[in-house]
Image 1 (tube, rainbow, N blue to C red):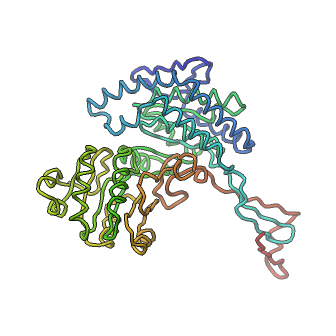
Image 2 (image 1 turned 180 degrees about the vertical axis):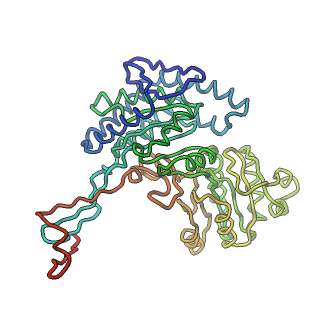
Image 3 (image 1 turned 90 degrees about the horizontal axis):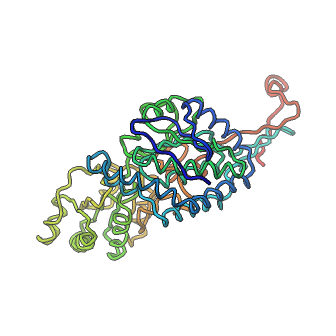
Length: 459
């Protein structure tokens, strides 16, 4: 397998469809048509072939790690310069790096998707309309996905694995900061799947604003757009396409510490939710503390997170409950709507569980919310009344992830109420098809005098 030779020239943009033997820039429309053809080939493809493609990808990630790390090193150097000029946030820079360990984790995630049950052809319902007239509802692929993402290289492998397993083709649009890594990954993925008989066009990549703007006009070829990135990115895409969009604009996640709580449990949960990986959308951004325990809990929290280098923000209700030395470590919160994406955490004291839920609904993004409590009734109320894609009890918000949920991986997290919600895995990349088998049945026989009657008997 030859090394990847993609080296974008500054200012160049377009479609990259490396095949392992050549590089061939193509128009966006032609690329989307090729993706559509690949999707139609994938839809009836046996599970064994789709799984073989995933195994080939996993092997390639390990065998070709030197190629991938070299491409990533170029992206990292450019990203550092972008951070220095303010073009790229430190949070996105933190998501960008690859290591041998990270590539091994990515390969494991691809294999985890391969081990999942086939999402296609599932019999979801069966109804006998009349004798000899049988209706089935089965799961089928969506078709062509367009996924637009910032920074994270593992998004390429996660999304590609989920798309292939679910019989969908995918067009990837990475951010400028990860272009070289993404191009290297896509070329190797295409070569890997091609080696087992899966169309290479099932995974393709394009670059630049003009190319993605054109892609977003192709509603006859692209079935779903999934943006993964900043609020500005998601809102821009939602406003500029007629293609359905699945995703979330913000990841403003809360942890509420109830009046009845085991302090060490709550401290451990908050520590993990904030410091494990602060740049991601399921990291905690605000902690709400019941006033009955705030006097004891807040000093312990400030001390623990201070050691971890967390910048703490709060209002007077927080600072008034801290010793002077600790109160001086807490800055003034400016906006409860803020998704920090770094080691910054907002704190607020609330009078009750009702006040905590009200705050969450007013300022949250319906992504992930958690309560720390030893009161079963409070836990159940929180689970039932908080409106979010994931709601948790005594657990870190970091669990809101497709891999951790047993979905193998995720194409993204959706806060929508339509089609899919929460971490979106294989099931969220399928739709349904009705199959009707008859024996010369005609609709006219079921109306008017002497009409036949439907049996509508479920099988």
